[in-house]
Amino acid sequence: MTEILLGLLAVAVGAFLCLRGQWAMRLLLAIWGAFVGFAVGAGLVDRLTDQGYLSTALGWIVAIVSALLFAALAYLFFAVSIILGMASMGFVLGGTLASAMGITEAWGPLLIGALCGAALAILAIVANLPQLLLIVVSSFAGASVMIAGLMLIFDVIDTEAMFDADATARDQPLWYVGGLVLAVIGIVVQLRQAGAIRRSVRETWSQPA
Image (cartoon, rainbow, N blue to C red; front, side):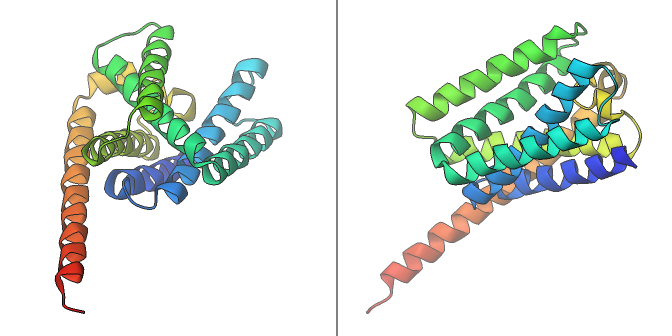
């Protein structure tokens, strides 16, 4: 039941990020922050107690508190939300890249994810993010989360392997193809949305008063 619930949550958050990543960024990043905070809190308790992922009341409590904290920071402080959002997207994409490269060491996905997260966080601080970059990054990150959620729902991985499913995914490359397809769909949908809004704005301003 835990795998199904987390899988459904991941699919929902991933779909929202993939298809609507450039809009309602404050709310979106608050939800994304809650998702990241939940995973961080649950993972921290698992690492410290070695009693299993979300297998104790303490794990759930810390995960929920962390989710609320991360969500509040992302919502109240826009700069923090941008940095948090880009860093977490980079971490997800880095972990996916490590899996695709066939890195089996436990530190591999964590290190590459951290480097990608830091790179995107720095980019968010020093540069104005172009709309296309935001669309592409949010689409790929959302697709990665959706694939992880679907793998949980269909019992391909368990909760402990949610962020370290490299071996399983390598054995079933269709999951990578599915993630790529979802990312492309997200990019197309968001580009069409952006184009429609630009046309609507131009038409509004071109109308006589």
